Length: 376
Image: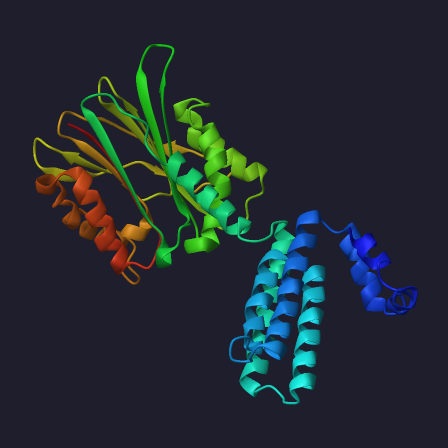
């Protein structure tokens, strides 16, 4: 179609156009560029031309030159760098025509606004070209990843008499953070119905740690249920060593619960201790499971903790974002958490879990995660 339009021009005009290097480059790009991007560029260039005609023929009040800011910004969102540069030339030509015909310059405010918008659009265009996506597709991809991470962290449906609650709060209100949960429910060869839950904390907070958490959640989620429960943390440690993980430390706590007998095993890799609520005495007991953080030593050795959840008992897992207080001992933070947990009993575990995370996350600017599993 472009070739037909060019051939409609007089031969002398075509010969003059071939002498302008920029027009030659633009014409070649329009022929070889992606179809969708060609149409977008053509639409924005046409909008700029119509804006120029409206300013000259109608009124500058209805078609102000400052409206070109929207065109520049739209170009930064949907065009690649080369096409965006061509659009900037079109916008510059339109501004020159307006200035020449109207015989008046533009205010410094318009010039500064257009310059800043151009820098912003160029940055957006370059970033999206590096990602290989245009428009708002990059944001939708992040939202899909976030939703997948949240779905993966949901504990599967439990049999009658059991319930659970997972609460996550990322630092700064971000959708991504360094805390994540993976879980699965499966039947062993001996007929046992097991629930496995792992709460993982990647060093850092917010979006900085979120990208690493996204990668590890897929790997750890694939290992959970695929390897023997007693070797899960060792397999995660081996994976980090094989990847030569040097982006900070990773802590994790892994719990396996027999949904028939209530017996459980907790293993920790540098993670804050799990806490058990004993309904018969109405007290919270701090666990004793210990282990080195993941990815530090080749052979991970953990000291597991075993126990049994009876009707009314609960098991609480959490990350250090809920208990770490700068300048204070970790035990003081755990005591503060257990003080808030005392309200769980009269209000119910499901409602109280959210209130605990909201209260503790307001006091700590860090990613926070809480997992509660209880037997009704």
